[in-house]
Length: 141
Image 1 (cartoon, rainbow, N blue to C red):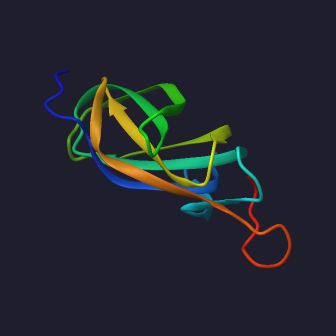
Image 2 (image 1 turned 90 degrees about the vertical axis):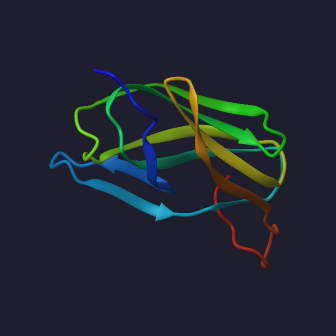
């Protein structure tokens, strides 16, 4: 089946947990765009990604890279395969990551690749220093 173009990104959510129920419904719990850590370097124990794609036709190998603001690859998620029969179909998928490295406070990005081709949209994630007592929000990292 020929592929005429990369899929378009309709939605990309970062959350504490992403999983699919036996009924087929997706559960997305604790959506966020910032991680708080009391010290750096830090490792975020687990986060989920939920992605909705459209305008796809054909077979795709999907890769997701997690990069820092200097465009260094810190983590790679590979082995995601999908096949889409109609460009009118919407494709939903989710995954759970573990042990995501955060070397310093700052802006990080998730980058999507379809059959080796970089998608045009970067998904940002901010990492901030939380005060140890009182002050800022304390989230896991």
